Length: 238
Image 1 (cartoon, rainbow, N blue to C red):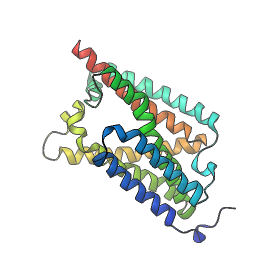
Image 2: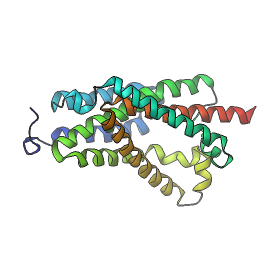
Image 3: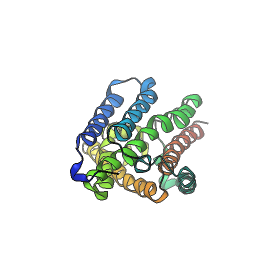
Image 4: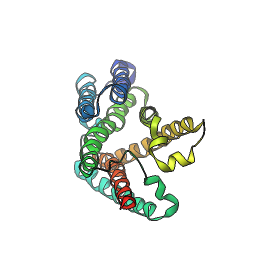
């Protein structure tokens, strides 16, 4: 039986948020790139222990169920993202958005980023944290709105440090936000955009009943972006 919100201490939820804050700084400002995947997977495991072990949330609350349903929803939404990306790459007006220096010109590095670093280093942690653990901890204490809204807000703030250099890495963003206020606009836009994406991912997680659905959609969004950026750079260089 799940205890009433008034009977539940906030300690696990506060601890999870603290772990995420510390992990974000360590990942973006302390550890070398070679530690990105193992560090983030370890953080995801630690958050899972907090939710399932310490706070006694069920696998259903965290989203570790309904894998078949999650696969169906994830594949469908990933197909939509693929079609949207290909249209964006084909149109000159939006093609610059794919010109991103973070996509390596080295094929081996590009493939590693797309198929290892993104799914295992980025997506696993972010989905376990912001669509699994944090919503489960928050909702059990403060209700469904806090679960979705709080997780989405934290997901937006999670992108402050990664977006700090986005204006210099992405040609489309760099052109749009030139000037002294460019970085502020870039970071603010990234926070708001990822918070909104967090709400959409949360809807997908709840609609499918499984964390696998947003994992697939998130992986396709990020990994395909890297692959198309790398393809664009290779095409322009040839």
